Amino acid sequence: MGETSLLSIFFTALLIQNVALFYLLGMCPFVALSRSLKTAFGMGAAVIFVVTLTSSANWVMYQLLEKTGSQIIQYIVFIIVIAACVQLVEMIMERFFPALQSSFGIFLPLITVNCTVLFISLKVTVVDNLSYIQSVVYSVSAAIGFWLAMILVAAIYEKLDLIGNIPKGLQGPGIIMIITGIMALAFMGFSGMV
Amino acid sequence: MNLKTLFGKKGAKTIKNAIWREHPITSATLGVCSALAISNKVENALAMSAGVIFVLLLTAVIISTLRMLIPSRVRIIIYMITIAAGVTIVDLALLAFFPTISEAMGPYVPLIITNCMIMGRAEAFFIQNPPKLSLIDALANGFAYMYTLMAIAIVREVFAFGTILGIRVTPANWVDWVVLAAPAGAFFVLGIFLWIVRTWAGVEPPTSS
Image (cartoon, rainbow over all chains, first blue to last red; front, side):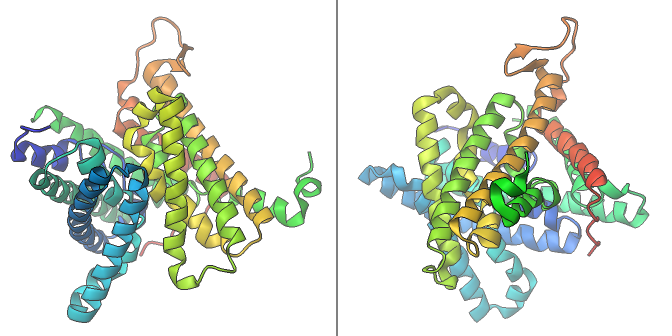
């Protein structure tokens, strides 16, 4: 992936191989929080922030592990870095940005177990072996893609909920799956772009 | 077979809860990512469930044995390290013995670490219960996870490729439904699956917030 342009990485991660709609990741917060546009927005923003931070940290970590030949513990190291970053961000926000903390701080602890975060860290290191600049571009655009998919689905769900004639068994997770499915079909249309 | 005589009263209740009433995927919607991503072929679904069950059992044994020693402030980190260690074992084992499956599953194997089902069981059950009961819970939840994954995988593989485990089961003039092999198909099949199971089991819909 050495000579791929940054622009094509951006569009691939944002639209064509969207983390939520192509790799089907981060579904737990997706299902739980897509019921209102406001929470979806907050969670998405928190994901963008944390992903950018952790994947750069993990990229450095991976280079270190590779140099010392200890890739066997890479998963453990990645997950600890993610947990530590989330904790750190939470503490800094509480101390310096209390307003920001109250708007999306409640989503931060949940992000540690969000598969998107670990996936993006793995993707830029173990899977694709990107350079530092490429990995930053990839992480930012993939996270924006997740945020985009989430608010699109949440907006549709809010409108559907107003009509309110969804069958009982399909309410909640069921209908979100179907909406996301249709959204994934629509995003398949982007596949010829790059 | 009577569950009560086999596992005792508490064990039987744990099993019933896990595989039907509080089913991890359909009732709590935990561990959905892998149920979607890995269910395009029965073969992959089997490997994934085996991996998850192994990690679940390992976590159950370690966390429930050490539950008196783990300070509650750092328990989440301890779960993560335990799970990550288990997943490393699974990943290396797959790479060594089943290289083709390992390649097909790619980055989804390490993502077992963030499978919320394992974290969820550790926090809700293993940390409070003795090893024997935790093992039963882990097995039951693993089984519940496996049968759901298999059900989705069988539907998707039959309709999308006309095969089960690579053996052709559909007539020769069968037209493959390619969309079911695509990510969108996973959402549709799981959505309909949730609809059927939730209607049948009478799960109350979540109150809109």
